[in-house]
Image 1 (cartoon, rainbow, N blue to C red):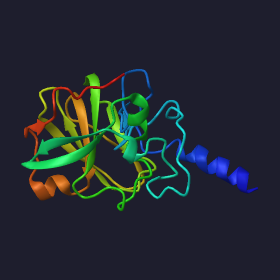
Image 2: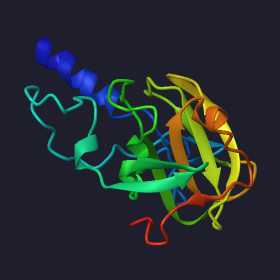
Image 3: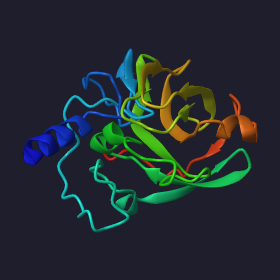
Length: 199
């Protein structure tokens, strides 16, 4: 009976914080969907690629996640005059998982995730916060690395959050960060030119 419940819990976990758009176009994790909801993580058409999970004895392991924060690349971005470390979600499967299952304890107020896309994404590629306990600022950024708009994704909410113009990057930060630091449309974001999607 416990094994059956564990299998159900793992299966349910595979479908969280992600782009809600069918994977017909490149859409990463917090990846967007056509009128699709990338999430504050993108909704996957298929579960994120399988990867061995760490054991329960490892305190740095979040049992609900495929991609552990400790295993992700981190880069520093310049945003609103602040330097912010962000985890890089540069593949579709990483983008599909996005911030799923992460808690306030695991993500500091000045940390986030960046979703680079290999091409400009249409505005119908939206994000949602399915299986995401954190409320997030979803910051849509154009190919010139300037803020388009900041959307709000509520905790554990499937409502779509969309860009007002086509975008090439999405930055996810804890909700309220943008307002607190005065981030607004047109502001530049210091994304390194080397930061690109891998697929």
